[in-house]
Image 1 (cartoon, rainbow, N blue to C red):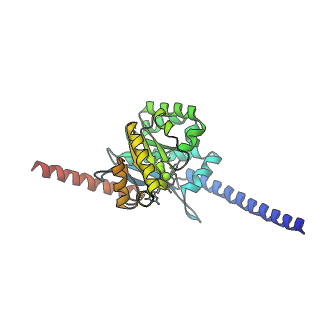
Image 2 (image 1 turned 135 degrees about the vertical axis):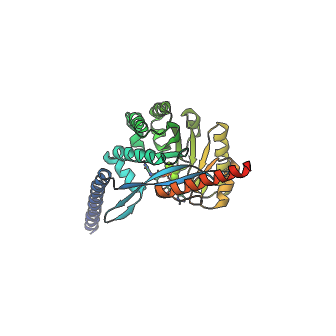
Image 3 (image 1 turned 90 degrees about the vertical axis):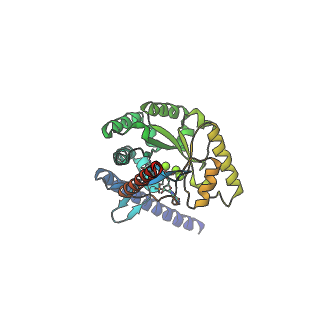
Length: 285
Ligand code: C2E
Ligand code: MG
Ligand code: MG
Ligand code: MG
């Protein structure tokens, strides 16, 4: 009897595995097509100066509206791209698109997420260079965001890759700091130009005194190493104010702007420029 039940469970498990595998294969196939046809799009989320709330940059975030399925989160399809070798084409597409778009927004920084699969590729710096050349964007406006997972696995290679990227003039930021196994010791030694504190920490800044003390200490430490800090996931004004008080110079989150299409950043950028001009004229008069 028990044996039978065991067998039934086994079959059931296998069926679920098959279904899962099939779904993944279909996803991979669709994703491959999406990259080839440029079905993927980018949205941009404002990065704002903590004291003036002016937009100083944007983060490019990839979107995929999968035919017959609707929008799929990058948190689902990026890992698929990683395990199927599609990440290189996807990453190149994102980087090129973001650098092209940024040409409409002189002096805004543009941040682009880089996944471990791209970063691990020895040719990565070469293709970053080719995108910089072909889009003619100033390298210093580009920030590549990498997450800490990969760094911990391969500290030596990470150091070399970062060095090569920095020689091109691009900036390198540590993304999602505080979301996992954060090693503060790595901060300085890898030469990060910025760290971004993960939303899982910042979201609790008002309610949770332990999160608050961790944030305060983390930002203070980064600042003592002269590394500027962005706080992500700010949804209400008070969170932003608290993080500014701790020493974050840059904020990001729904409160300051959700990820939006290129045209909306352009609109926002021109409004901001016009306001700055008005202020200048006002000051002169
Ligand atoms: P991330 O780089 O940490 O990006 C921030 C994520 O938080 C984005 O989710 C953004 O939409 C979301 N977010 C921003 N502000 C708020 C807020 O105030 N509240 C809440 N609840 N969420 C907020 P998204 O766009 O779904 O991206 C998820 C992750 O997928 C990103 O995390 C990044 O790791 C990855 N990703 C996105 N685009 C790309 C890409 O082009 N390449 C690579 N390699 N990874 C990407
Ligand atoms: Mg990011
Ligand atoms: Mg982040
Ligand atoms: Mg995050």
